[in-house]
Image 1 (cartoon, rainbow, N blue to C red):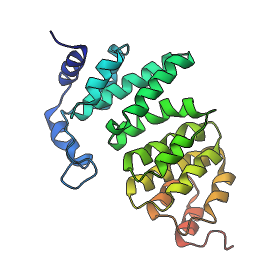
Image 2 (image 1 turned 45 degrees about the horizontal axis):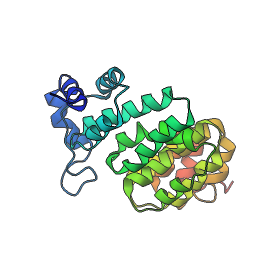
Image 3 (image 1 turned 60 degrees about the horizontal axis):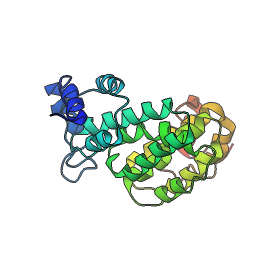
Image 4 (image 1 turned 90 degrees about the horizontal axis):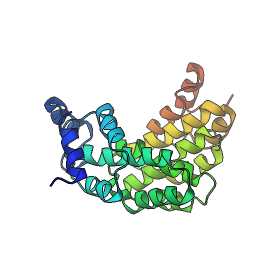
Length: 240
């Protein structure tokens, strides 16, 4: 008899597109020595994975673990989308805490940038909004690429709630990180801060922007006007 996880896998397989299965490993850098090395794809796009997740949003923890342990990217993605749905529907702290603990326990299976970006700020963000965030600081300092991206992208929830200082604290830890996936994540969250509080963003950037990786800075100032962007990129912002 098939397990529920097997049935979910079968549902996903029905949406598989061979041309996407060929393309996605290149898009997610799954070659030897690349950040996604060894990841496998069957060619299911995110909207279809969401459809499958919605159909199975009451899946139990054992089923989700079976999906998360799969080498197939879309299986892990669907497990995480189900977790997000479950977290949003639960109202009691005990139920939400169980989901958070499950996520934290298996965070090493959240091991590509889309898996991080589609899950962490919807689960860890609301949970940590009014709680100690030491875990995020520890992960930001961990040297582990995906935990570091989780730490930064979780701050999307804080940025949208107007908590710029919480975002800046994590950004400072990662400011000189060597990997472009972290540069993009930091810049993305800084840009989100700026959507709501441009003066706070500029105050943060002015003493730091000349030392920031170029990609990080470009992302952070994307919504500035053209003259301001030119000044930042030329290293002359703040000299006027």
